[in-house]
Amino acid sequence: MLDFADKAVLITGGGAGIGRETALTFGRLGASVVVLEIDSTHADGVRAELDGLGVDALVVEGDASDAATVAKLAEAISERHGKLDVLVNNVGHFVTRPTPFEQLTDQQLDDIYRVNLKHVFLVTRTMLPLLRQANGPASIVTVSSIEGFRGIPGFVPYGAFKAAVTGFTMSLALELGPEGIRVNAVAPETTDSAQVPLDRMIHESQRHNIPRWIPLGRFGRPADSAGCVVFLASELAGWVTGTVIHADGGALAAAGWYRDDRDAWTNMPVIKGNSTRPAARNEVS
Image 1 (cartoon, rainbow, N blue to C red):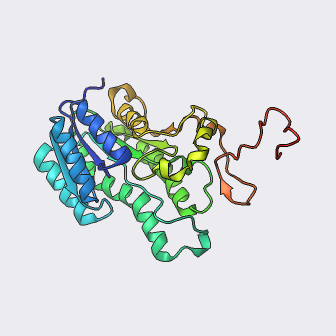
Image 2 (spheres, one colour):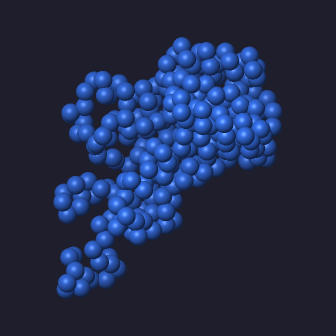
Image 3 (tube, rainbow, N blue to C red):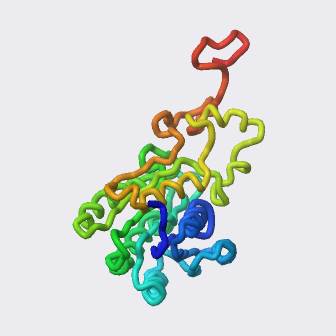
């Protein structure tokens, strides 16, 4: 049920992080892999890895939010495979640094939309004719974010567009269900990758607290989300559509944004004593 031989899989943003691990995982499972990647260095890297695994791979450099690029990609997939079995919409990014909503420019809003939602619409719509030619039931999986399911101060449009991915997933699942095309999403918590390098984000003096921040005791790895994507695309999930898997180590069940003692927003605890007992006299409560 995890054999993707004779299956063609497209991963957008497949050159780094979750996208790269997803491409490699599908390749190891026998799929013919197509990667769309905007960064040339990342494209070269994943191409070399796929070639090293002996995977039938096509790596194309380009922007998933550009209509002409996506149309040419669809033509290339049609010529090479004649169909598409799995589409993974993986592209996404905060785009800006933390910024109050009222201070965002029109250009910034457009960029956040383009990188986090527009390409999902564009790529999915363009690839639907190929998905209808799939070798058996086809599958669409979009990589979203836990931030679509909780508030995220400083990144309001990002959170809004990630929430929109859920609505898109549910509604398109209803439209395409009668054709046997399943539509799902994966919503990861913070994942340690080239895009979000936790070793540079968390000071060494605080890393011993990581097991307290996530119920399963660590932040995500690209393989965690890649595994969810592969599951949703496989026969094991043959009766799953219109849903979102939370690849978050239990964080959504436990976490909430709050302000620390400097009045800064955070979702990482400031450890000053144990919440299960009263603070000692020499501790700050």
